Amino acid sequence: MKEETYSLAADTVKHIIKSIINKDKLENKGNMENVISILSTSLNRDHVSALMEMILSKDVHIPLAIGDYVKAKPPAYHEGDKFEWDVLMDNGLATEDKYVYGIITEDGSWSSEFDPYSHKMKVDLLYYDRELIKDNYSITTFSLQKVSKEDIPYFKQVEKPAQRDLLDLIKEEEEKLQNEL
Image (tube, rainbow, N blue to C red; front, side):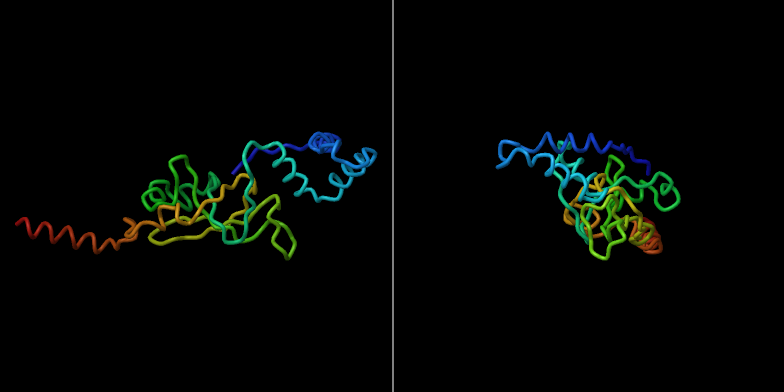
């Protein structure tokens, strides 16, 4: 999965931060440069990126947690190797606009504590081949869309077409033929 990313110069980041701080609310306006310096230098690279994303995005960001269900664009090379679109669609594990569902398993940082603002998240993408398959993949955090498990058609279906045993289907067809004779 190729995602467009851009780097911003530190001065640009400082300028963006400065533009959102209401200096009229500072008791002493001389502290403005110190406030900007703390915000732009004390945060790690992932957190600065997350901050810029949230400042400049039109969408509200909902922080993710381990166990959250998400929609994601799967890597192009998974198609045909790890899944088929028609099978995922039939089983309620893909959307018309070519997203698949997954579950957050951990963040992409080296920390022992989960970081919801990590640049990447490890996600068990939910595929299907006679049974539910989980394929762990690292995806850029801000490209993920949080969803409710109840909104995933797979978990709503009583009987999924591809889950039925092929032998049962053949038996049913034979019985129909017998009844017609």
